[in-house]
Structure formats: structure tokens, C-alpha cells
Image 1 (cartoon, rainbow, N blue to C red):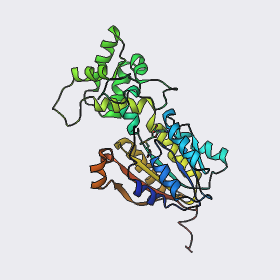
Image 2: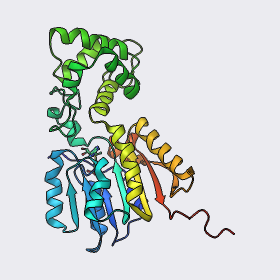
Image 3: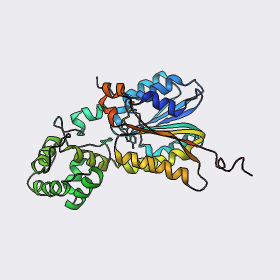
Image 4: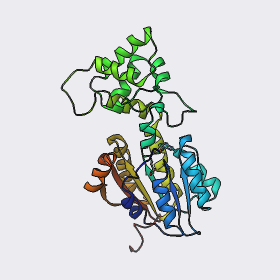
Length: 304
Ligand SMILES: C[S@@+](CC[C@H](N)C(=O)[O-])C[C@H]1O[C@@H](n2cnc3c(N)ncnc32)[C@H](O)[C@@H]1O
């Protein structure tokens, strides 16, 4: 069975400052590692609403639903959390929101999903394969400039132009449909010093972020998360990519500094400990940030 080890679990639970009777949101259910740990700490008066747009998450969610009547699963993108909370009547009453970004190990390790070039599979990369455009479909229609721009802005790929040029040349003769085929193409135009990471890593990451609109989803969800939190509620975000972390960092900083701010950063960014990284290499790039919602007048209270 494919598993996913929840990253920075204790730090996430501490960051959420869990209350047994609180209402919590897990925006990234995955295989339910964080959700199960949250549910274990809730009393029947508390509740957990979890989200995942990957239909493959439904199995684990169904098992948790069967065991916990206060668990509610929403098979929709987390950028709809505001709407879901409004419908559920919990907007403004949420005690904590957790986002553990990126893909899960089972998604990454299944060649049929197309996230990895380690084993050949269809060039798909969608978290929800039922909607949107696959990586193959996008590579078949995007212009050379669009491809180069995505590889550069979302992958910081120095060979972005050469790769994009080769994609457009190759696709005239044959469609790009496989992960191994695309990785080979990238290798064929690779220039520059040998790197620690495989030359295709950055391009795969960039196209994954693009086809899933991951950064747009994140930016939208952060605003909605603050809106649905109750005063004292916590926002905890785990990022695995510098572009994600930059969005989270700036969002929390700007929200804290804004006129009439209702958000305060809690502590500094955190990283996984050595023992966790040794047991779970995925944790190596994790960065966790916490913020707390405050009453609108918290800065001026007590003054004058
Ligand atoms: C890193 S995994 C979460 C793992 C989970 N915390 C666990 O312990 O099993 C991220 C999950 O979030 C989902 N996901 C990513 N972006 C999403 C979005 N915008 N809306 C809903 N789900 C999303 C992915 O499908 C994936 O299953």
C-alpha cells in the first residue's frame, strides 16, 4: 500500500494550538496523516473539515468519515474554502486552518499520475485528472514563449529557452506524451555544469505548478483562510518550494502590517528536525509558518 508520512506533524498540531471543541480545516487531506492526528485530539464537540481535489484521496477520507461523525470531507480545491465554510455555517468560527502544500508521496510515486520521471508514465501531472489540462495537452498547444516563461518563472530553469525550442521542434513530428520522453528531451538540450538534481527536475516542477495553478490556489486560499478564522484562530502553512514560501511569508507579513490588521505572525519559520529528515527525506525542504487572527482593534486596545 502506498503511504504518505505527515511532515512536521507535532509542529503543525502545536502551531494550530488545538482545542478539543474547535472547528478546524485541513486544506490538503492527502492520505489524512494530519487529519487523523487532529481528529484524535478533538472531542465530539469539535469538528474537522478536510479538502482534497484529488479523487484518489476519497478512500482514506471515507475510512475517517466512517470512524468520526465530526469529520467532513470536501472533494474540491482548497481555494473554495470560503464558500464551503459559508455553506456549512462555520465562516468566522474556525479555530485553525492547515495547508500542507504540494503533492503527496502516493501521487508522486504512481507513474500513472505523471508527476515523476523516475518511472515512465503518461505526462499528466494534474492533481484532479478529471478537470483542467494535462501537462501533455498544455505542451502540445502552448507557444514556445509560454513554455519558456513557465520553465523560467516557476522552475528557475536556466535552459528554459532551449527546452521550449526543442519541445516545439519535436512536437511537429510526434506528440509529447510520456514522462520519460519529456525527461529525455530535456537531457538532450542540457547545458551547464552537472547538478545534484536531475536536469529534468525543475521543468517537471514548473509544469506541475502551472497545470495545477498551485500558486494561484495558494494566494486565494490564504485570504479566505483569514476570513473564515475566529479571533484567536491559527493559520499554519507548510511549503516545500521557495515560490510557495515566498507567497506565504509576504502574505503574513503584509497582512500583519496592513492598516487595521487582524493577523499576527507567531514565531519564526520552522524546519523539520534532523531525525524527521533522516526518516522522511521529503521533509528536507519543508518550511512551516504560523499566524494568528486577532480582533480588529487588538493593536489599539488598552491605549489612551
Ligand atoms: C503534501 S499532500 C498532504 C498530505 C497530508 N497532510 C497527509 O498527511 O496525508 C498535499 C495534498 O493536497 C492536495 N492539494 C494540493 N493542492 C490542492 C488544492 N489547491 N486544493 C485541494 N487539494 C490540494 C494534493 O492533492 C495532495 O493530496
